[in-house]
Image (cartoon, rainbow over all chains, first blue to last red; front, side, top):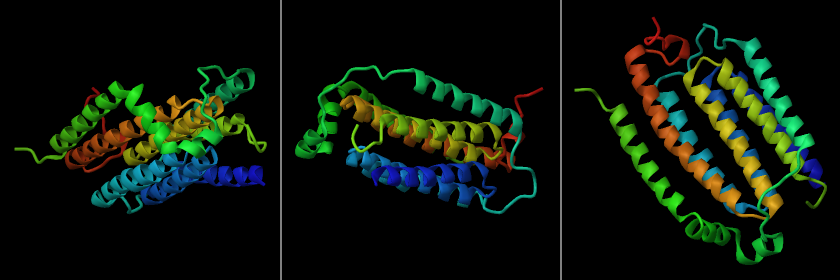
Length: 167
Length: 103
């Protein structure tokens, strides 16, 4: 049952990914991308990471996509132009097929290696996923967390400076 | 893992999504669509991170997803500001029209 559900959601995710790449109108691309984000949020729930699913919907589907659609509306890109909207399709498809083949080969031949921890499903359900994330974020990853806040500050200032009227 | 869905399923799915994003970045002309394809690639990497984090029973991968999302938000803010500036100067955001540094 769960395998069937996985394949269904995976199919929807891949089809909306294809639509992101092939739609002529940028607004349709954005809507397909929101659909892909929701499918990925479903996968995060299936992987017992509910906090990540919530963040995925709030930050990606909520904040970033609203920003993108806002810019599409602002620049009035919704009107379909008659010019070609792609270039280099042959080389692009060859290269992306190569990437796919390479990754699948590595996946089939390789083995997962890495630092195994002690987080189990029972532990996630007992302690809570958010608390586990917060514990890791504020103990082991405190310095990257602080650097991230500086990155966000720089991005805010950069966006304001770039979009300011000259003069 | 349980229920017959292995980590391999998730990794293959994110490989497919990543190569779709690569295709979009390489072939589309509209800069905002290219940007959205980059977001698709970032998301497929996030799926890899969470699947492997679950597989290994380790929380570090999910913290990395957190950082990837932050970087994506910063990238969205700066990238879209760049596109607005570009549109103001060139009246277009097609990447073929951005050739002022070529000679």
